[in-house]
Image (tube, rainbow, N blue to C red; front, top):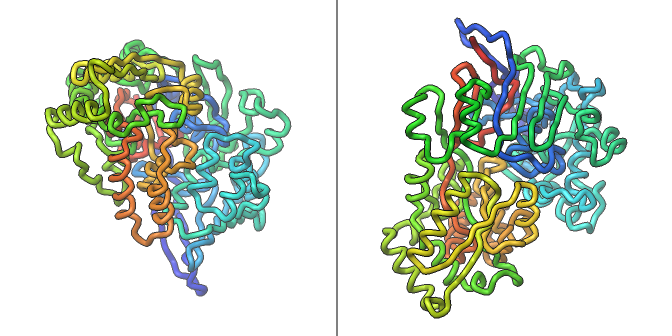
Length: 539
């Protein structure tokens, strides 16, 4: 798929995405398998698959199969057509006009219209919906009036998006947002069926009720066990789809999941923590590790009601310094992960990770400084710190928590206990600030540094640490209108590294076990956004 840019008489930029839409494309000489069922492993059940409520990576992957936004991504992360065939950008870059295809329909046969997007975006931004991702619309997209809608100071109908007609969606921005069009590939920006939601309320995503516009329809859902999605024959590009059925299995035990992959029960599985190198030798064509736009980190609870020790920046800095990240990346994970001392990954487009003091030290120097900081803060053998690390249930998260807590005890004399929770319960506890230190992972919602750094904003819905810095807020606000925001991003990273509201631990790689018969996986998409309609299986 190629993006062609043409200047119209009005000098407004018209971007048309032409040619056949990307889909499953078997190579010459390949023989398709008779059974086109794609079965994959997930660790946790998603709290929701409602596009207006989804908040996790796994749930978003489900939504990319059940729903379709204005634009999609190809195997390299480039924009390609979705419901929209193309879009215009005004001279001042503050008005986007999307042209919707006339053959896009919902799974019940109703046409997908511009009004469906207007309804979905208003609904996501509306405080009454209580979407955990409302901030994505209200704070990130730059849509006119979004902030006032999100704060409850304006009605959802004032949001700067309008359906000129069924096939023309116009979006008005408060300022030029270079990455705006990337945001429409996110699940929060997908259309949702108003009539179905109004008829069934919170139960509209049950298999017997759900109506979607993606390449698949949900036919079975057993919470904490399995989800089945089958081909949507009403999908506009169904003729280019090969996979007939997608089966998502919730298997929390990494070893059990891999054993089932070895037995051929799974096409895609998780590689057990610490076994990548040995399994790569055993299965060189099937075990993979790709760069990914994600960061693994711990939150400190720096809210006013958080633990007293967490209010002291010297203690937070000491905990940041007091463990060896290479023990995690090289000793436990062993799959190309990179130690992190700042938040934004090196795979982020246009971003260079700044070198902060901690990154330039040896571990011996880090530990020595950590001890000095704790002593300066008044903590030691006569006034020890005891803390708790909260993580969502997973053998990998447990291994990391054990290793870090042991290093804190050995290096700093800090006693750390670890506590795990099921994913949904964990998300609620973390979001409510019911923790001292909590495990977190953030994958970019679009490929630009602000998708990470906005989590430092005091108003961010995912600022789980409760960090509040007027200077950082001001820099982030300035970056939104800056011609070159990169220097501002560097300042934010530098300030946050000194304030230490979080502990960056490592930058992810996408690690998995994939059957050699599965083709079309987007290895070069650092966001790891995959669509089952682009996959196929061979004999």
